[in-house]
Image 1 (cartoon, rainbow, N blue to C red):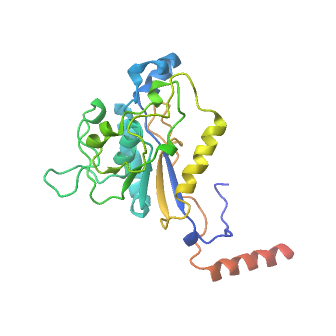
Image 2 (cartoon, rainbow, N blue to C red):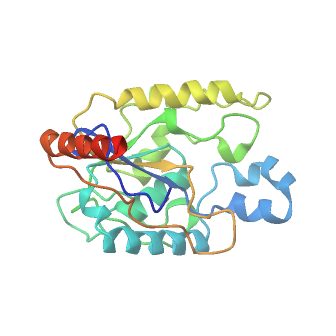
Image 3 (tube, one colour):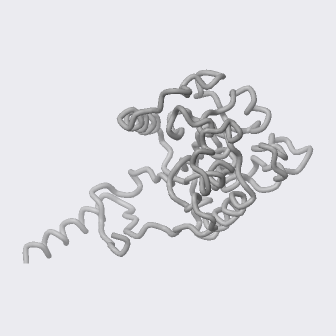
Amino acid sequence: MDGFVGSSLYPLHRCKTLHVVRHAQGFHNLAGLTDEKALFSYEYFDASLTPLGWKQVENLRKHVTETGIFSKVELVVTSPLLRTMQTAVGVFGGGDYIDHVASPPLMVAGSGNNSHASISSSGCPPFMAVELCREHWGVLPCDKRRSISEYRPIFPAIDFSLTETDEDTSWQPDVREKEEEIAARGRAFINCFTNCELRSMVIADRSAIGTDLPTTDYPGGIPRGLDIPSDCEDLEILENEETLASL
């Protein structure tokens, strides 16, 4: 599939591009490598990124900048968990924050008991926290979020307006979310943005940049395929394909 080059029934200018990014390594991931039972400990409640996690963020930021992805993103959607918001602003934020500028920082210095510098909200897309794209709800303290009132001072420039409750009312200590419930939640999340005019968005929560393993490597790259600029050209290619198929 990676080597396939062809046309689509829908021209790219009528489609939305979703870049799904998994959060970088959190302290709960690190603990779980040697003891899975550690994930049940409240020591890892709403875990923040490890030093390796921040290195992964740095590497991914370099990748999306060099490939041109960064400049095309119009909105960054992140789940309201500490590690996912740290990943999102670290990769797609505006770089180091400078005091006394007009715009608020995306993240203040030292968020989540780490020594990372403040991150600027200048020169980057807007950020929005959405509850529907969170990880598996329930049982594990690492998947329970803090209150939104606690997050706002840490991430001043993230929009939390779509998060309906201040406290985490979705997470239950003795009930783990079922697979079909996760699927329904995913469909509801996608429907939130189906009719918007944005073409390129980032969803930061769980995907695959290799963060459960002690490495800073990840599979990157730009999807191959034709960027058809018009319906006419798309139709011409389809007609040519049909002609070839009939030979």
